[in-house]
Length: 477
Image (cartoon, rainbow, N blue to C red):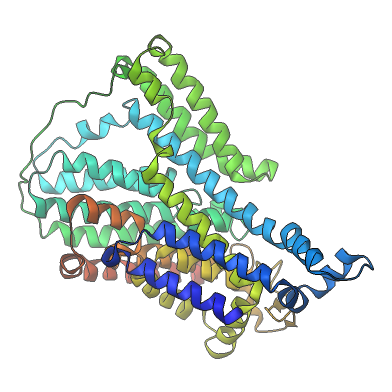
């Protein structure tokens, strides 16, 4: 049955990787492999539990005779809910950040970007819009940020080829910006929530690699753009009656939303509560401010529609369901012990976190960024200290190279390499991450065009960022 579960997961990953060809929604595939995997696990629960959790199951029985019902209750209470809780925490965090950015955008809090990039000069427009993308995606959800920036750019630049080049730079800026903070990318949220990294240390190490991975390809993309762009400046978008908000009100909402998210790492450090609770608190405060400022519009039809953020609707829900499905799928595979045996094999035959990280980056470029990141994260536990042995899937503890094992302590090198390499590596081919898929759909861009014009540029930036990260880790310790 372990083999069947693994085969289902591999077929699912294949369907996710080829979703741009088959038009099979990757969120549906992820939910399928996540749910079916746990159903199969429960059907053969006694074998799995006796293999992976014999001591815990014995304590659960408390002298009673083992039965099929007892093992199901044990799986539900002691195994399944643990993974559901982790997935729910990440999903609720994404939900909150998507809703925050939607409220800010619907109230015109990002209109300054359109005013900021009002130029025909390709260099100024490219750098202005990608700088804004990099900064915003570091604080909010990178997919929603990408979609918003692509819509702004799409309404300004008339040439489709120029839009595809600038759009590729936007996708890269959003991905790189999201990967250097613990709240900008789902993989970072998972690492932070699981105690693998702390917010300050994570950002301190990944800021320069992320900047490198964004700046190098953007410089190369700029060389393919003409000096003067074919642009047209549309009128200020009509947002219903909410355009009555003046600049200071929009600034207040912007500070509440972005400033609140900046406070979440501090909130988590002080309370030790899950980060999603802080994100939901920020969302609730912003929502109240939104209704206070728009109190005279509550009876208007447009206002009634806007009271529920658009991020709750179909488009962004796909990302939420995808993340939930992948986390459930990797959880059931982890409980079979396969990830532990994979980690043991890598420790024995590879024994180098940089090779594993680079390989994961290349793999994420042809499959899916988050799926590969979760597989890496699930293979290893977070060690309490470099003096402790590694716990593998067979339940045995083995001592190893102390320096190597130090890569898996909190803020260890492995977690940073995984977060950076899988995020930026996912931009090697645009279909491997959600931001790239948004660009493909909006501009009807083909993979072949992206490979000819962007893949080598992204590869150069990715490898340059890896070199910067390597220097940081070995210089800073």
